[in-house]
Amino acid sequence: MPSGKTLVIVAVTSIATLYVASRAAGLVLSTLTITDIDIKGTQRMAPGEALALLDGLRGSSMVTVRLESWRQKLLEAPWVDDVAMRRVFPRTVTVVITERQPLGIGKIRDGLYLLDRDGLVIDAFGPKYAEFDLPIIDGLSGGDGSTDEARAALAGRVLGELQRRPDLARRVFWVDVSNPDDAVVMLKDDTSLVHTGDDQFVERVQAYLDYAPRLRDNVPQIDSVDMRYGERVFVKPQGTAGR
Image 1 (cartoon, rainbow, N blue to C red):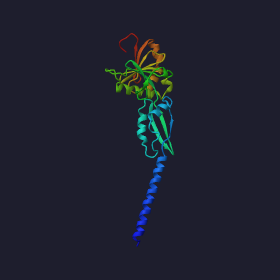
Image 2 (cartoon, rainbow, N blue to C red):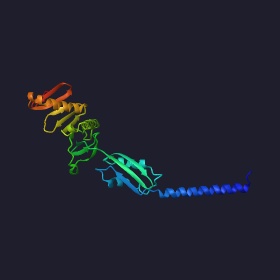
Image 3 (spheres, rainbow, N blue to C red):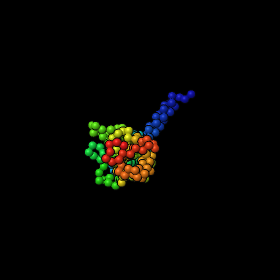
Image 4 (tube, helix red, strand yellow):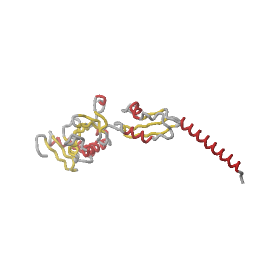
């Protein structure tokens, strides 16, 4: 049976060991601080803009920092669709940004805005985005002038589906979503208004293109064409009230 003196020595040794381990752990934590932030994936968003949103992350502990809270800050930026952040020991945090893709130019009140695949605003459209050849989206504003959710959702579905057919998307000049149940499309070099309903946009626009030569043989000046009823195509000549 160990003596009291032995027990005291063991206790002192254990405390000393814990103290050394604690100091060592503290030393390790103090040296594992974030000094580098590596931003990847940005094209429209400047890396400096992302770094500004991460102001305060540099100098934090690599071990204890909550990266999710910083990720949420980045998600608030207009161009950011998604963010992945990871620790690269000993001192680097890598940030991979997925940017939102502009698919249309929305008319809202008296302004023009870049819209994403959900019909939501990315940024005000201006000269710095002049290279974008995107369809104009009209009819987004409700009676109070604000963006109507149902109309924005319809615009998003139209833009999203058209991306399945880039060749077709490039031909679309204008889309009107004033009626949330009927997107009206106008193509480049074609003044006809094509009613496509609230789904099957690609199929109905393509069907119009297939029918157009025959339709114009019978109705040279077309005001609008309703493609919502399968093989029954309703044509409204210019200058008439009916269809």
